[in-house]
Image (cartoon, one colour):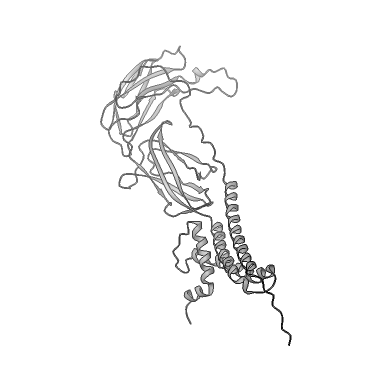
Length: 404
């Protein structure tokens, strides 16, 4: 009876094949990790420059004597410029607009403490000599003036004593208007001790990178109760790793919202993280008044989780890593050329490891086995795929399926 002769290889070839497979598995893992980072860098949109803040003060301010207030520097309100008509017209700017009411007042005041407002009428045409009647608005009952009605000559300054009676949010609104329709009025917000904070809704759970989520910011007091604004403000949001969008806008790194008097929360905002790995997002919120003065700076943190397909890929890589390790241990037990042994012994183990990684991802994502693992990190999915490949799918199914 003929016996087949078995080809044996020296130990140095066995060792070299094991080292070769280990290096191969490490290179494959390193390659796909580098590929993921490269794709992330290519798809990350470059941050757009923040738009310049809109200013209602176009010409330089009028030269007047400063108001003697110890609490804060006065705010100067120059006359707004009027753009020329798009088509030639014999009517001049002075004929379209009589002039503007100007005033100088402190930026920050205290409740029930009097402060001075300097008011004057600045005509558009120096030839205008008619007097105008000016009214200090007390409609909402939060600010009292003395006197509240003024008769002003052109460029004549008059002092008004004012004090804020009450304020829920720490803001007050100063409104001055005249008896002419073509007379520019003034509507200014001042700080009386703004103490409201921003509380984010729908940020308690992590946001998957590349997906959007609706966000609403509430203005709350020290006890966390909703509080209404006593005056209009500008709410600015910006972030380095998150995009913002309103319902009718486009995605941007910064967004500005006009908040009206009486509002308790912001409109619905869509946010979308840009980071492809587990990251801590940060929204920098700023509340400003009169387009220049800031009354609140607040950072709002939230958690960013990797996209599902990247987590699945890392779980597969963990399973492949274990399959490669198993191949290096068993490849010397078979006979034949090295290439044949790799495909005969190594391919089934590596393919089985990849399948175990896929199954591990869905088992954890659907919470079928109750495993607690840090799935917000990509390293957690690599470990998960490796463990499923090591333990074996059959053994795991025996523990989770009901026994007959």
